[in-house]
Amino acid sequence: MSNIKKKVLILSPFFKPNIGGVENYLDDLCGYLKTHGYMVYVVTYQPLTVRIKAKPVEIGENIEIRRARWFGYNLFHKLEPYPVLEFAYLTPRLFIYTFLFMLRNNKKIDVVHAQGLTAAFIAKFLAAIFKKRTVMSTCAVYNLEKNSFFSKMVKWTLSTMDKILPLADFSKQELIRIGLPKDKMQAYYLWVDQTKYVPADKKTAKGKVNLSDRFVVLFVGRFIKIKGVEVLIEVAKTCDKNINFVFIGDEGPLLNYIEDQANQYENIMLAKGISGHQLIPYYQAADVLVVPSQYEEAFGKVIIEALSCATPVIGANRGAIPHVLSEQVGRVVSPTAENIKREIEYLYRHPEPLSKMTGKCREYAEKNFGEKNIEVITNSYYP
Image (tube, rainbow, N blue to C red; front, side):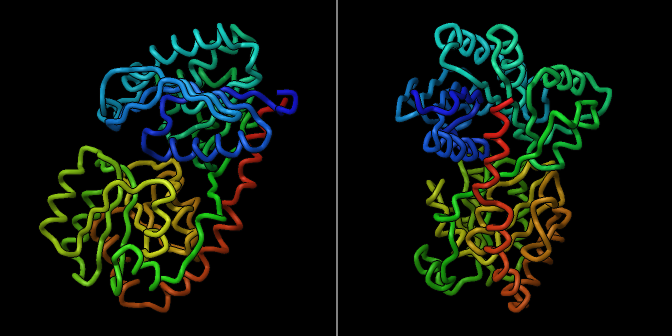
């Protein structure tokens, strides 16, 4: 322990093997921290949105993970439109579990890094009791209205954080709008390991995933309504039948619907059991990734994974997506079936503009989404 830079408690309701963007980001963050001189402690729940049971305690080199049991498989997704109820569901058990953890281990912890509002609420009390530095990362866009009860609760919760890390400038602006001081904030951007997410020859890549000689439109994400899955299915059903749509995701509530559509339409395919680095061959093979989010998307890590693999992106004009994409490497549209279909068919019928975008993706990703982005987070661990 003598060479450890800082001992960091990562506090989050969600962590692998649960599946989602937050889980992928935390996997990357913890992987970086534990190999760059930090001791990492993770307190989280057992998976809440997938039917997987993880070890309650995992101990590895420079990392310890503890998972609390909680009820309500997939209840989180049902409560997403109701942030106060969602907060009430996620907070109590994690609060008690983390408090007991800190009673036993508070001398081992230098910094509490809270992921999202539930974790920040808990960290606020931990800081008061155990006198620890607290950092909060936003993991979502909260749609805060200036004088609403929810906004007042957010402001109260975050006002005592030593550092607030909004995910992209879009998130930062909504926190400033409700009265949080901007000098406490520094926006951070996600990153990918660009030694693993790399381009490949499209023809060769397509052959490796059994998509040879096909124009491939890729969707990667949770199979829930707000991710725009149904909109993209509608596009697939009405598009030129030479355009093939590949859907990769978890066991969300729309899984059976997508499976049914894949059985009915030859140009719709469902790839099951694909996650993490297993996605790389699909990114490399795709001609375009579509992110048709129907809500204010916080970031969309799949965007930068695809760009790093030299695949252009059509993204919704929601949340931080317009701040992540550039016209050099993709298109931003209002996420209706008509708009998305128009962009896909244009790129299919005009290979030259698509080729130009494809050629610029990797350079754009290297410039904006490399591991240097982690420095904003690690710097926040110090006064």
